[in-house]
Image (tube, rainbow, N blue to C red; front, side, top):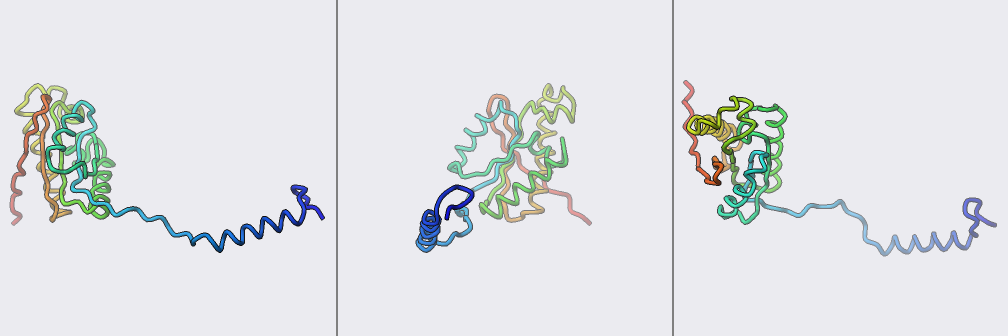
Length: 182
């Protein structure tokens, strides 16, 4: 008797079934894939501006992180935490920070803003970068807001804030104490 679908005989069919039965007894049972437990030292938030990537990577290489950090890039960096240019950017940051915190057990968040940022120019006007003192103050304000937003949700994280100048100089920004609520 021949199989109608492929013109093979019963013996071919029985050999196939027999081979499969043997293989199933030899092969180990399948298990769900498990991701390797990884630890990162920090989550880095920077702007998407490609002009600053080399300076930021070099700076991070000097921070004893050993390339063990998660990196999130959003237009405006600290400005994104304030919901600009989109509230989706704010949510994306919090989602990434939560994932990094829970799954990579980070101990630190690093926020890198930079000079001549296009997102800041859209929000504050194209002449912002022409006044370096004002530009730095505006960035300090948003970096400070980012610090306290992160601190509120993740009080055990160390948070570092930086401003990268066009000449690749990196300035540490210290957070300003919040006014006490009465």
